Length: 484
Image (tube, rainbow, N blue to C red; front, side, top):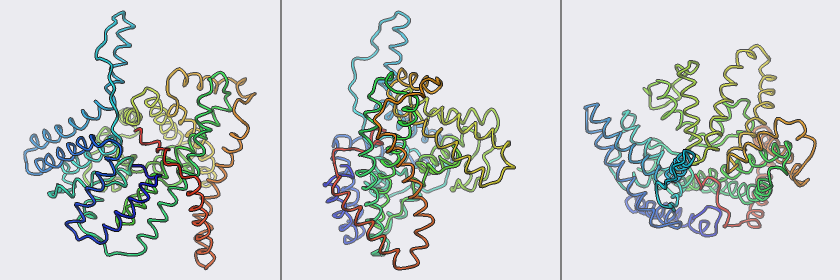
């Protein structure tokens, strides 16, 4: 089931209604079963895989907590993480590694078929719920949380439908206490939840889905028909498309949970207004960035998580040493590979590692410059470089990626245009729209909210959004992050 469908718009009010009217025991079962129904709309057979992952980590976490012997605790942790990664590897990476190994053997003159032709369907959401199960057992191992003894509650945390497919990536410590007891009903839960869902649907069906054809047409062109200006334009266009698409999913997820009085962490905060690559990743897919930091990057740098709240760490040790930079590049390579089984995703990850490194090395030279001017220049430099990073993310093969990269360094490729004229205009208007939206939300709206005019304008804006969502709603268009 996808959020931008009539089915979901019927499903959500039904679940919310049952949630507020059913008593505790039945409410937990209902939420769990309805979440499994939500997931089963795609392929019911993969519910079994989800249940296996839940059972594995539910019992392993109890065993980890039961033992005091550090060797036994670590063995149980390795069992859990190893099996979860093995399942992820089979469904997401086995074909990739098999194809690459056969390609190497063919280059050596050994025409060997390692495995018969495989047709493996990637289970939707497997990357996201694998991260959540791993973080749960690791948190129990670190003694940041106690294991959940109620299996239905733990399963609900894992399969809770708003976040199941594409996040936000949740921590057990954030959600399990909220699932243990229901908050007192407030109309504000429904109002704010509906507002967030509506914003998400607007971003998806009105903006992202209407940008998508321009992006698809641009990347479908032969690379010889694309100029350097077109590469930059396509990078911005796809950057806006994936932002509106993924931010839309997060809004709908947060809003759906909010209707039941359950709080999800924010996942986006105007990332394209970031003044540095580092700041960008504190604003984009925030829950993934935090997960990678806490469960991959910090351990690689040698930093031990002594607190359940990682924000207590003011400075990461070894981050400016050779070990720190090795950890940075390895983390980003893995981050790229997590997004997809392709060398283009690895290049995307390493590209961001280079941007972060360049930012770190340049800080010393600009520390005495006026703060506001430094931020403005940081944004002017960071935005195009960050947008350019979407080219390897969107490109499907290394051959095309090489052609796009070569055009960027040839001055002659900046003297002509290959896309339709409206592509450049739409890209510029989207950038202006983003800046105006930020000014409206952060500057104008707080002032207007002091008077009744603020409520009137809010009502008008929501009414227009509802009308546009009804007009543009196309349930056949899935969210981009479903493929990860």
